[in-house]
Picture 1: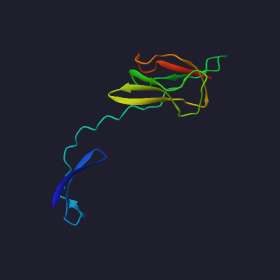
Picture 2: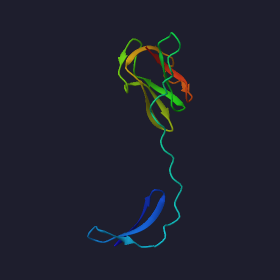
Picture 3: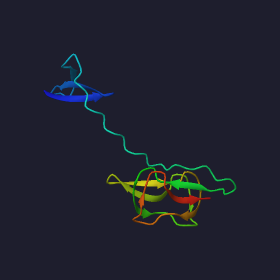
Length: 126
């Protein structure tokens, strides 16, 4: 038999598993002290600003601080909602910044290697 610690909704339980693979009842009546919950990964979806009065444009913004590692879309390219526009590296992860809606890329406002902060405009769409 092997013992494992299983965390359910932030509460840790000791569980013993029999050789046949079936779970036995929890060993301890009281749960163990829960370890701190891990932080959730940042969301990859960009914030879409409301179109400026008369401009008819949507800003594609960084959702996390980081460095631009790749520009995927180009000016004049048609994109669908969810298509990658820019890839930002943050916390050693590559995070795609995607188009919030169908449209055409009007401008790319960053360059590869540029440092960006949360909320910075990376591109503009029509």
